[in-house]
Amino acid sequence: MFGKISPQRLVAPQAVSLARAGIGVAVICPFPLALHKDPAVTVRPFLPEFLYRVSFAISTIRPLSRPARTFMRQVQIAIKSDYG
Image (cartoon, rainbow, N blue to C red; front, side):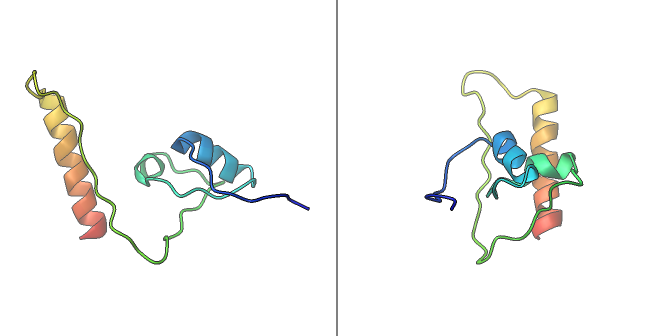
């Protein structure tokens, strides 16, 4: 009836759009959804739980700007408060 079901790699906005439309589910980084709550999409824990390492891509030739340092600090604080 539905044909072959297989995982696909999509960027988060595309994957969430498909989930919102009821076409599929998405395993995504939760950061974009934390800022933009969407009543048509729910976030459920992925079980079994797994480690997700967050990294920052920064320049090796230019110093970090104050807004960049602030952003990094805020992400670290948010992760600690959400995941202890």
